[in-house]
Length: 423
Image (cartoon, rainbow, N blue to C red):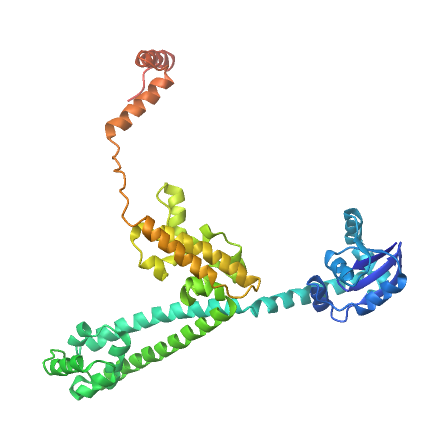
């Protein structure tokens, strides 16, 4: 019976211990990976095995599947024979003609390992979910930068126009007014162009005349204006990042996006590490992603474990009553786990997941409409602890009523043996 042996450098056909035919790989790393994924083209090998007209045995399951698809009678080798081939790999490569000697075989195997590792790194780097993770992390860091710069602009420009800080809550609106310059140059159209309604613009215009802020120099004003422009540019960057994340999530993980939303889904994906890793997680793990500190603290101290982590940002969880949030978060996590698995294996968008989730959330809202009463926890008294300590001591010295007497006898025997304790 002929043996078909798959190696890192090619495929060889052996009759007992003699190589009958060998098929070297032109690009070993690429062709080896394609064969493992059952995507390789083996026309020459198939024609040769068909001409033999006998059954063959192979050492690799992927190669076995491909040969059986072409109606070639093949079976898998025994484990002992596969282990023998692996232990004598260098000799097999030399006998197959893939290497001139064992030293040459070692060098070619080393080159194969390096090229295979680099191809794996390239493949992983091109994964689209990793780019989504970078985008959502950039979005969160952009929000932090905007908040830091806006607080600095409010404090600095507030020395010139302090009344503006209490009346304008939006960061972008405040920055647009700062870019316009000093308050003495503002008109009512300045506020309307910044996006404020006419009533508020009229109020701000009247208020600027009564402002108690001091004057600001040209040098300080130019610096504050440049910071405000940077804030507005960061807002534009943030909007582009949001659109990019939304489109990419719809394309790569449509079911996860339907259940969690684009922003929350991207943050859960970033916390999991990848879409494939998220698909392997149970619903209980997805539910507490982002609350690891609280979870480990609960395991250590015995306190109540967290009911939700990043899922608290979900609209259904955030808007629900406090006593319903844990149950709703668990229902969302269960559907998100199913949706991630469908996304990984390319099942397409499934709208029934969202429908079932809405039905489940409605059931939770009806069943737990009223807040449940919590049993009152009675604090431990010090005398109870003392009683327990005395009970342990009595058990150590015999228990019952005679425990104290036995303890006194034990202390007397110790004094006789070792003398009085020194004070």
